[in-house]
Length: 440
Image 1 (cartoon, one colour):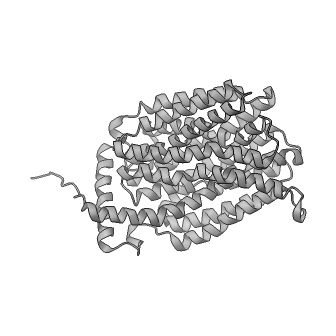
Image 2 (cartoon, rainbow, N blue to C red):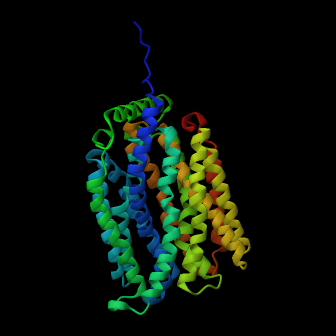
Image 3 (cartoon, one colour):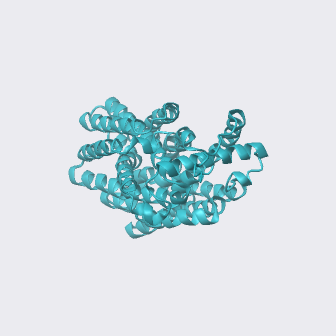
C-alpha cells in the first residue's frame, strides 16, 4: 500500500501576494489602533503616578504593588480567556474584553486609597488577559509562519507608538487639567480620557473584524483559496516539526513551552520596568514639568518603533528567529547598564534608556515567532496563552521590585543591574531553543 503523504500545494505567488496585501491593510491598522489603546490603558498609571501618589499619600512600594497586581488577574485569566476566544470566535470575545477593560480603566479615576487601587488594577487585568494572546492566535488564522515576523512587528509597534504619543499626551493632560476642572484632578482626567476610546473601539471590533478567512467578504474566492492553502501547508510543517502535541495537556508537559515561558518572563522584566518607571527615571534627572517628562519619554519609544519594524523585516527575509530575539535582549541589557552607570548624566541616561527600549521591545515582538512556528493550530490557543501568562508574571515582579528598591535605596540603579542580569539569562536560553523548530 502506498502511504506517501502528499504535501499541500503552495498557491500561485501573485494571487497569494495580493491576498496578503489586502489582509494586511484590512487587519493590521485597525488591530494596531486597538493594541495602541490596550497598551496605553495598561501603562498610563506610570504617568498618573507623577501626581496620584502625592494626592493620595501612597508610597512607591504601594504603587509598585498596585501596578503589578494587575498581572495577577491577567495571569489567572489568560489561558481560560484564550480558550473562550478559540471557542466562540475573535470578533465577539475581543469586543467584550475591550468594552470591559476600557470601562474599568476609566473607573481608575475613583481610586482613593491603596485597597481601591489594588481592586481596580486586579479586575482590569482579568478583563484584558485574553487580548494579546488572542491577537497572536488570530494572526495564525491569516498568515503562515514566514509572514508573521513582520506582521507581529507592525502590530506590536503599537507599544512604542503608545509611548511616543502617550507620553506627551499624558504629560499635557496632567498639566492642562491640573487646575481640577469639574472637581477632578489631572490624573483622574487622564484615566477617563484614555479609557473611554477603548470602549468605543470594542463596539467597532464587533462590526469590523472577521473570525477567519472564510468570513472575509473583502477577499475574492481565489484569494481565500490561496490563503487557506498556504495555511494548510504551514500547518503541515508545524505538525511535522512540533513535539508539543495537539492537546493542551500535552502542551503543559512540553519542556520547550515552559522554557519559552521563562524566556518571555525575562523579556517582560525589562519591558515593564521601562513602561512603568521611565517617566519617574526621567523626572529624577531634574525635569519637573510633566510636559517635558512626556516629550523626553517619547524619545526611547520613537527609536524602538523604527527598530522593531526593521527587525521584523530582517527576521522574515533571513528566515532566522533566535538571533533576532537574543541580540535585541543584549541591546536591552547594555542600555540598562548605561542608564545605571551614568545616572547623573541626562544625555547618557536617555541614550541608554533608548537602547534598552529598542532592544526589549524588539525582542518582545520577535519572540512570538518562536512558539507560533511550532505549536499546531489545535495546541496554539492554550499554548500561546500559557506562555503569555508565564511571561506576564514579570508584570507583577518587575514594578514591585523596582518600587521596593527605590524606597529602600532612593535610587533605581540596583534594580537596573538586576534587570540586566535577567535579560542576559533570557538571551542565553533563547539560543537553547532548537533552531529546526523555529527558523522558518
